[in-house]
Amino acid sequence: MSQPEQRRPIRIANFSGYLGDRFTAVDEVMAGDPVDVLMGDYLAEITLAALSSRHRQDPAKGYVDYFIDQLRPHLPELVERDMKVVANAGGFNPAGLAAALRAIAAEDGVTLRVAHIEGDNVLARLPEFAEAGYQLEHLDTGAPLSSWGSEPIAANAYLGGWGIAAALAEGADIVVCGRVTDASLTLGPAAWWHSWRRDDWDALAGGLLAGHLIECGPHSVGGNFAGFTRIPNMLVPGFPIAEVAADGSTVITKHGRDGGAVTVDTVTAQLLYEIQGPAYLNSDVTLHLDTIDVTEQGPDRVLVSGATGSPPPPTTKVAVFGQVGFQTVNTCYVTAPDVAAKVELLRAQFSRDTPDGVELDITRIGTAAEDPETQWDATVGLRVMATARTREPLDRYNLAGRLGSLYLQTIPGYFHDGASTLRATARPRIDYWGALLPQSALAHRAVIEDRVIDVPAPEQTAATSQPVHPEPSAAAASGVVRSAALGTVAYARSGDKGGNCNVGIWAPDERAWPWLRDALSTAELRRLMPEIKELDVVRHEFPRLRAVHFVLRGLLGTGGSSNLRIDQVGKAVGEYLRAKHLPVPVELLGAAGSGPRTADGVGA
Image (cartoon, rainbow, N blue to C red; front, top):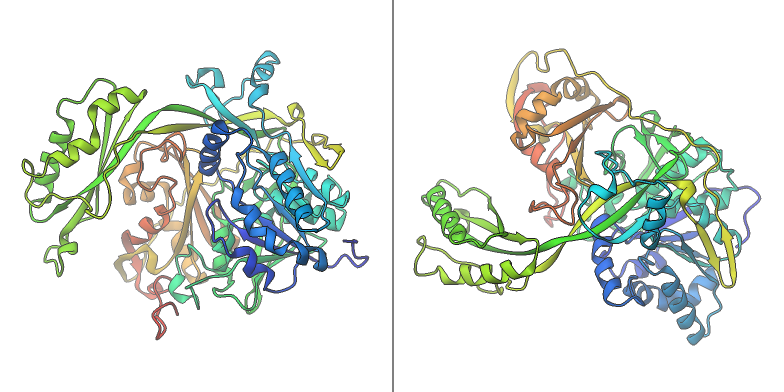
């Protein structure tokens, strides 16, 4: 594909937001509007942990097998339409995935150049790093990796997008990666297309932002959106397209044939997702989110502009995983009345004669209706998880056997889901350590056929800290107020970054922004969420987005792969907050929240 002289915006279409996303997405995108690059994101901290287990069992694997099945039917058309594919489906073995793709292309008589990116897998280099004095400090606590107490089984550094850009410049048609940053899958192709320099900070920041906005698939098209009842055709929302211009400004849109919608609020939701504050750190550039404007350009077209960038940090993140034990989990059910007393007896029975080394986490789910209309309105769940450092005490505890033996000797109405089998076999429990490593220590390479391209570490770096925003001092509510759910006025989106949970809350109606900013102090958030009273909470404001943003440090333990919460990676925290009541000015009620449904009941 030759680069156009006019440097028109590059059109990059996402087709995967995580490992397990819709298998038919590649078919849908190929049948959709014309694009230049297909981009697939398969990896997250929790999915990387899952792939690490597969790789240990079979070192020849460790990549996303079904990516091949998704792509294979379309290989001839990719050549015919001169389209590129960039994906991080390589997992722990991008070279193996590249070889498999070359083999099927040859078998099908399709001529394609396949490249892979390597250098992220640093597990074997950990002793070398220790000898060189790199402590791989925890990015939240600063503690050295040597203090962890777990034996690493996987360690992958987050690479940037310049290896992808180099592979495309060498004529690669498909580029498969391991652990590059999610947004690098878009930033790399944009940098290649527009011939950006490594110090084009504002343009690079815009490309990074474009990647952040489309990396999670249908998110920007209405998926996982608090205002979903106001999005048309939410049955199957489509996948987004980023039109990235030479200056880094981007229009987020979608395929015209697909469901969902791209609006200012769906884009804002993704913009606030899984960030740590206004400074968005990346391997290639630091993006400053507080200068961004999000404006509607037309139906399903939202312009995101004003991104400013500065040099990247000297370090990058390394996702280190280690096994910290084993776990078993099952769920039983309690029916009203006397729910509290029934749960208390079950707790005592589950805890009786617990072997040394076994720890229990028992969580009640839901509240029974006072006057239930159906049996299920009277029912709450009780999730029981047992953990231990080794498998043997869990086998002796026998959680499945305990739950199954209580039918005639416990609370009235005790049962579990008869259509499912109680889990008896303990599963490994994988912990996460988010470490920091100098970028100069990495060996970032692009490999295309027999050519190896070394990608140097950034020459310019700068340590950037998050800005400090003062707490609101004014009284939040004035005039006539009514106790109402926060969700009647605001939208929210939450997610995970290691053991931290972030949540962004914004006002879709500009009239509500002054009230929201003043109402959502850190103290008020602690009142609304009693479970965070002991946690460190960081608060920021985004006036251009009419948003207040919080980082709840440690809510997710040490990370999604090992914490014991049922909402393991904090995806529902935003909706939980929207359900909370506080005094709201009457004139603001109804500015957000549930809207009218269409006749088919799918969405407004």
